[in-house]
Image: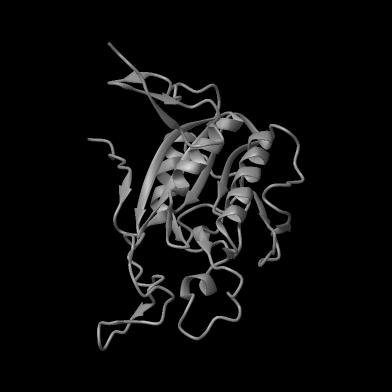
Length: 254
């Protein structure tokens, strides 16, 4: 009898399956201890993923959710084995609430940030806090998605990995969820005409992001050296400051 093969790509929009695969591979098949952005508990509604023991949210929706920010948790150091962190990924600007009908569809459906710097601040400070409360060899699962803001592509998953390593996490695994949703920043598809209606973008400069990442971070000494200080061909990658993207310096390798 062959064992189930767990793949990193899920094309059926089944995020519960990804979470259970992560727990099976990296948490001895034990349930999550906490979710720091619980909201309505979407991951757990159908019963396929066991409800976490601790539920936190900045604006609680359920009666059993404790009000707390993900970057300031009322917990002791090194007290949690497995955590889910599913923060917003949308940049909506200042006009989310006042935007016209049909625009900012995703921002109205999900929580959002005013600008990308707010996103980075929240993600980074939460990773620092989660490192504090996570047990040695405990894990954090973070769901994130690359985004486009002000016509610029932001590789959020790279930022998350960079910040996680800065605080001491070891990036242990990644899973990719392909979404079947037709809602985009270009609007939504009219089922009768097949055309996009509403939306903020008129000209497309980047590919639409229809996938998200589930990154698995472990609190342990890294098993892989991710610094880029080696000489490759005639270039050296300089990574002196983990908080900044790497630079390239041409060298004479002769």
